[in-house]
Length: 137
Image (cartoon, rainbow, N blue to C red; front, top):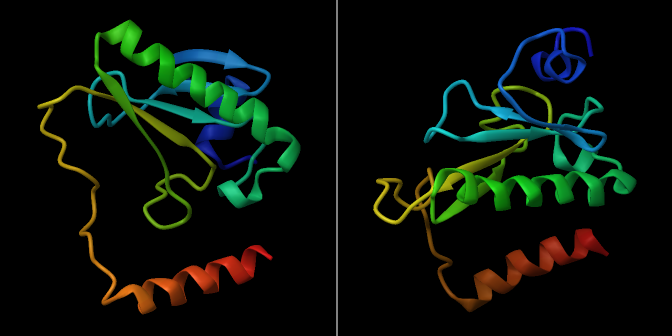
């Protein structure tokens, strides 16, 4: 897509600090990292959200994400990673991208970035689970 910065990075027409460039996607440093070494992994074709990614591309794409998530701690000496995808809400670039953020105990990042809540009771949780299950068929 002509006006997508991530498509331009994949095509090589916009510079990026690439960590991997493979047939399954491209991984590059986030320009505004949560922590240094924060990598964005994008699929080669322009798709906006995870549900838009064709099923035949899932194994290769998530294999690439897995490889990056394994490499980051080894390369940087972090203890682990935080791996996340935003779909539409909080998605600053409308091209599917997976964040791989290096993490170390005591790094200052507290849980998730949004407030947490609870279900009023098991009945309410069951209702939500049933609604989602019905959509999954």
